[in-house]
Image (tube, rainbow, N blue to C red; front, side, top):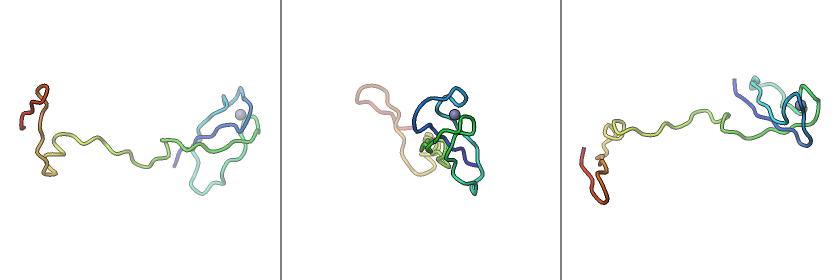
Length: 81
Ligand SMILES: [Zn+2]
């Protein structure tokens, strides 16, 4: 289930801190009010909702993909691995 992040449209709330995250089923209606303080909220586009984060490519992966990997030895010097 996706995680949605919400923040209060205005004001502060001791219960939710003005910003909170909720795990909700995809088909659930969009939340319009804080469940704690009932004040209007808006959805925050956050990194949490990104389905998959791309892992940084490792040297091994790069080699497998056919890249020639050079290790930086120093200023302007590279060693072929
Ligand atoms: Zn609240």
